[in-house]
Length: 367
Image (cartoon, rainbow, N blue to C red; front, side):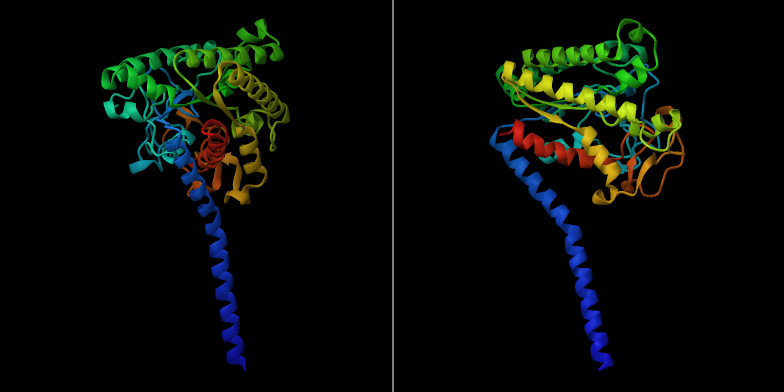
């Protein structure tokens, strides 16, 4: 009798383990199905590539060749990238745009347009013009000696010239018209500019500066449209008050609510303006609410397999980013962290953002 009971107990335990394993696999299965659906939609709608503009959230290494201190081309950055090499990405691995491009079926990692190793074939599958420390306000980029959006668009013009030489004028225009354009910036306009340097606060109140940034975003989207963009995805700013660096500077253990309120308000205006531009210009657009995505991961980490939400993986995780992260020890399990350094997300968090972005792209840009 006892043996039967032990046998039954073992069977129940084994079944429970099997069910748990199946449940763990279900999100992965759902992700795979969602990605395959987006890939099919991309093929059906002749999507050609992904072209990226912005700041460190989407810079794969353009700053490597610039005379600036804002670089991430040294360890421990790139720890979990292919072959464990630093590329200039401010992350332990890949960025959200890398995962988006992979899901659409083009490349596993979007190259930097200024990468000396860029090949002609790379031009066909998408590149990034983004520059870490940049922003909608050209002054933000100029303060850090990085590429402003105006300069990024100039390099996009160079890209068009190279593309025309490679495939001809007609095919080049077709590639650009069917590309997905991604813009991701805004954080530095506040943290590296308005709240740090006195120039803009002398000219604008915070509310007026936000409106100025919205007008800059509008100008940039209109210029992209003039240059051939027909599908535009804009990524909002994250909850700035939850960045470990901000919490350290504000001497708080919880998210600094005033900065989060700012992020929420700014994103609401960006979303509204993008929708308006879509209608007036005939663009297909999508807004990625990275504020809501990151905040949900911080509030409900176990839903995403995360455990550490308050500090980064590099050094103490409270103040280090960029050059101050150079050569420091890192946590053993970054896949359980929201932040890689005191400012930037981990590859795991970027993948979560990418999955949400892909769903929006499928619904709004590829429909």
